[in-house]
Length: 427
Ligand code: SAM
Ligand code: SF4
Ligand code: F3S
Image (cartoon, rainbow, N blue to C red; front, side, top):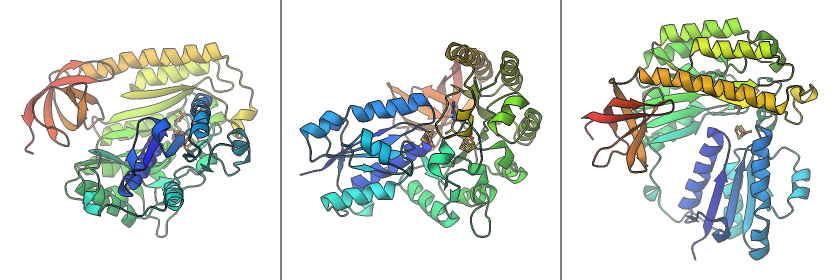
C-alpha cells in the first residue's frame, strides 16, 4: 500500500524551501502527496509566528486536525517551524494529539521520524528523482545574530549557522541537473553568510562560486540587513552577469527614533546612502523593502517620515506589516500604544502609496523588451519573472517551462506585467 502525506506551509521562503525538501525526501521513499489531510498517513504543518495573525492561523489549522486523529489514530501529525520553541511543554499540553514537535528547518528529524515509524527505505533510484522547480530556494544559513527588538525569528531560529560553500554548491549542481535554472540563496540575514565559518568566507565569494555553475542562468539572494551589505557584495551583483539586479533590503522605519527603538543599528541617513550606493553601482537595480507601521511610540510624525522615505526612494516592492507584539521579545515590554485602527490606517496609506509607485515604475516598462525566465503555466498563460523579479505573463504555443523568452511589455499593472514574445530563446 502506498503511504500518503500532506504538507501545509505558511511563512517565509525558508519554510517553503524546507517543505519542498521534506516532500522531495518522502517522494524518494516512495510516499505520495495528497491534497486532503483526511487521506494522509502523515501530516506536516510547517508553521510561522512572525505576527500574531500567522500564529493564530497555524494554531487554527492545528486545531482543525484534532478530529482526524480521532477517526484515524494510526495517522501521525507533525508540527515543525517557528511555532516550536526549545520548550515544547505548553504546546504538548494544548495539542496532545500531535505526535511530534520539531524545531524550524528540522527536515532530517521529520524524515527520520517517518522512516522509523513506517520502516521505509529509499524505494527509487536517484535517477527517478522528481524535476526541480525552475526557480529553486536554497537555504545557505540558519538563524540571525541581530537584535531587532520586535523580532521572534531570532529567538526561534537561534544564532547564525552557515552551511559550508561545498555543500551549497553540490546542492545547486544537483538542482540544475534536475532542471532548475535560477536559485535564490536564503538566509534571515543572508549578507552575513560565512562569518561563523572557519576562514570566514562571505556572500560575495559564495555568489562568485555559484556563478561558475554551468546551466544556471540566474542567482538571487535574500534577505539582506543594511549593516551587513558590504561593498564586496554590491560589487559581486554589479559584476556577475547571472546575479540578478534585485536586492531585498528591509528598512523597517523611516525615522531614527523608531529605528533606534527597533534596535536596527543604522540611521535613516545611513540607509539612504547605502541605497544610493547600490543604485549607482547597479543601475536599474530593483530594490524591495519591508516596513513595520505602528511600532510602540511611533507618532504620526514618525510615520510621516516613513511615508516620505518610501515616496522619495520609490522602491519596486514594499512589504508592509502592522506591528504585532511577540512574546519574549524586548519590544513586547513596551506599551503597544498605537491603536489597531490607527495601525491599519497607516498600513493602508503605505499600500496605496506603493500601488501608485509600482504602477509608475511598471508603466515605464511598456514597449521595452524584458528577459523572462518561465516557471509554469498559470490560468492558461505562461508565467515567469524578469531579472528585476517582476511577474510577467504571456500567451504563446509550445512548452516554455524552464526557458528564457524575450518579451515586449504590452500591459503594466502595479503587481504584474503582460507581454508578447519577440524572440524565443533557443531551447
Ligand atoms: N531578516 C529579515 C529582516 O531583517 O527583515 C526578515 C525578518 S521577518 C521573517 C520578515 C518581516 O516581518 C520583517 O522584515 C518585518 O517587517 C516583519 N516583522 C517581523 N516581526 C514583526 C512584528 N513583530 N510585527 C510586525 N511585523 C514584523
Ligand atoms: Fe529578525 Fe532583525 Fe534578524 Fe531580521 S535581522 S531576522 S528582523 S533579528
Ligand atoms: Fe515566519 Fe519563522 Fe519565517 S516566524 S517568517 S517562518 S523565519
